[in-house]
Length: 193
Image 1 (cartoon, rainbow, N blue to C red):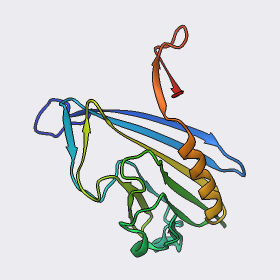
Image 2: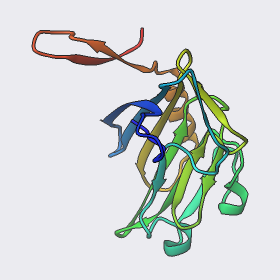
Image 3: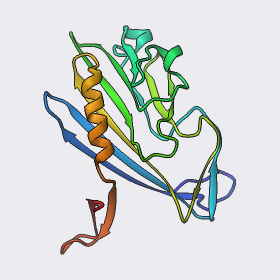
Image 4: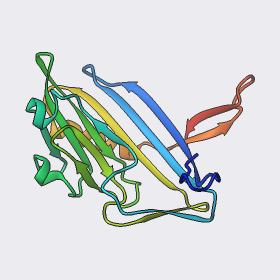
């Protein structure tokens, strides 16, 4: 649960799903889905640059420490051009151990405010900022649900491949928790039909 430090009562419950799967050409994909359910009828997240899910790449991939490259789906490059701008995805790529690799971070098309503004820094930080434009509420009837995908890839950013991964991710149904799909289990996870 989430607490505010002043009241021992839980403010909200967070449901989190994470799935890792291999991709072609030594790629790895990490899909994350989270939902925020308040204990009251409504809870408001205040305006902030920070998102609910962030990535910090290694120093060697970062623009400042390692000479890496930061770019987004709109074709912008570098922190000043990417920070606070709307984009479907952001990528950090650079040299690591004698070869080039990177991570592309995708925001799902079903997320509120998609495409989001991004909180990025030249030191290797990147996060979709769900509340950069202003506060965002979550309710018991309609909990704030966010879906993200990380795509670890070899080589420099391939914008065509990133667009292909984004299209496939946007078509993929969300996860859902189901009770006891088989004997000796309490819960199961499946894609919604």
